[in-house]
Length: 380
Image: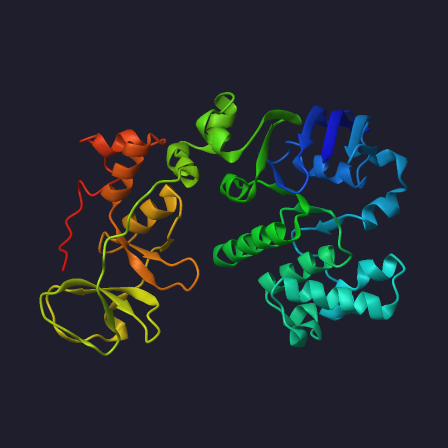
């Protein structure tokens, strides 16, 4: 557990970056600090490992004041990941990841074994371990940064905007990887971001900070969306927080049966939208067979906006339906990725109305625009 007790940081020029910050970050969970630029979130993070010294107040890790430990010793016990990975360009991936174990005094064999284990945990290969950072993509470099932070087996990892320098697809992959690693290792993570979607996706707890280094609200993502503390928080979370809240709404939706067609198979003319799959049964996209017939070729297939997994949140199910060219969201098995069936937006909204979850009233609102009210879809 990390506890801030009335922590303030004021610089020599009189600027107060953080003022009277008090909160407890749970052990073994991800806590996200989020807010606009200049709100003190990075300063707060850096005070945990004493890269920035507080002006007043105390920060405790597992009830021990960080000020009671030598700064260098403290930092080596805490994993630290920054925006651009901060790798040594003249060292291989393996040598970069071995840095902290070697600083801790581990022998070369032990350091190498720990580094290789960390490299494998973040999804990199032994071949990549022998490369230099310039030979890797931005996403791979960031994985190396995470591996380096994990190499000494820390119980705490600090992450300062770790994924903001990569493209959205890689960012989503890295977010999934972080969640997997945290679940697997049970480490405590404190992450800074300016992206509210990232905060809500990754955080078990989210601290929203306002200008002047004040804590505006500290809550779970679901509570933050349902009950913002004030207008600032409501504005920062965004006008579409009702839709975001669906990401935490569990609904029981039984997927509809959906026939599939493999590439190369014949499709009768006038079949409507057909779901294309590859030779293994994995979904590829939709093909509009309302006005043509014949063998299904790849150029006929329109890719998905998104797919949902069985048991996903209402938001993911609804997004799959609304982003689908056919109006039918594809649901896949969470284990093997095969097609389970499809859902309509109305299926999700009806389930929300039955469960009483946020957004459920929309299912019975004749003026709603988020369902299929204005959509014309011909089904097979």
